[in-house]
Length: 542
Image (tube, rainbow, N blue to C red; front, side, top):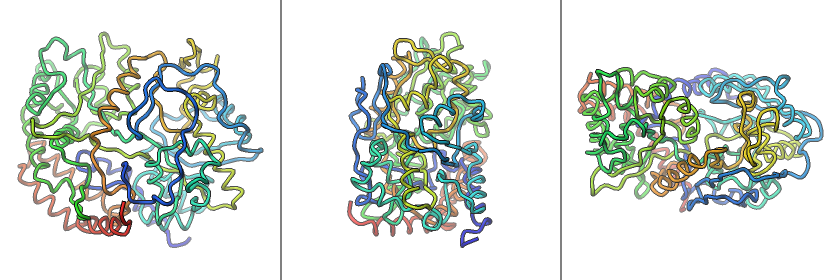
């Protein structure tokens, strides 16, 4: 094997699956997230051109936002005029957040996708939490599929891409992307995730950069007199304390770490890093962060968090929310419809969301920022004709909302997996299982806000998006790479999380945070900072 030994890959990649807690409010392991003012790759980014012609009912004011639709366009047509394959097979390795779908032999939806592609699309996938191990083993083995998802923290990533994958700059940069019009419709900022060494190394899995929402059981707040939409830290604390009744086994919230993130955002604390004159500061070094930690500790001492909140899984916290044990939960913005679905069988259930608030009248809040690309799909080294064929498949999978391809991938086959109510596809239980094939983690379009038959849900999702996007926290690290961060950032973050949890559990004073930050700096944090500053400088002016 070449310079990328199996041992090195496993060491660097498996950490991503076990140290997820590092990102819970700490942001010390800076990710390559996207914003609207990136320095990296401006001369190699694909030229944006809107894909599809579906007219939205709700049009975002931000280039980062999703359009909203109240119904699926009737009589959808294909966005790609002819099948991208002429027989043959395309293989892919990716991840999923969903249960395993029925295999192709038992999945007519997948079979129909193959038919319309004109060949076979074989996807091997693993749960997202286990993907780092699968990726490492596959890359180390040397027998790569045509398409590989680059997801999570990867050591020596620029060198790995050069050694194993195709530089897509000549195929997709600038106007070259017009050969793949659906890929041209992906947001400009999502492509920055794929740029290393001023070259394009993949196709992004584009997302709106809103990572999470503070959900609230609006039905459990109604009539209590509590401030359901807090306007400052005082009202926020009053809401959490008022929702808590330990004698009735009810606590306001199950996640102290995310509560800390929300309080930090109320103080205007940016995401992982801030930049001034080329100098980087981590948010954990700010005095305001320690203030947010002290406020969260106060809430912990008041008993507003579920006793098992620090060790619970996301699934447990979601169950507590649905059954009313904790009326507030923090979850992914993309999962809005899932919370509505889970609550559908609960009498009186009404989903609400908490907006970001300023700590006080003088504070300007920010909204935590996610990435404009969840991952990207790299193309294994191949001859140019094969690369173009693979890109045509990725383009087909990226067909936009309103197309017949989108309808098939997301809802299936009329009469088998869904029925039409008007022009809206209402998926049945069989369809819910068959459509779990992770096509969208191989390639997909810019997401759309659409909830079949639920105009109120689409409107609520859109309204939250439009309030959040203008106050997204800046991220100067987007498009930058730090090898020390890739190699050590997750462990450094885990150490900080352990200290934070000790403070919130009452085992250590808030003052112990300073020593943890010093340890982080000496253990690699300062080197990460230096590498980001150097990469920022080398990137040149915006």
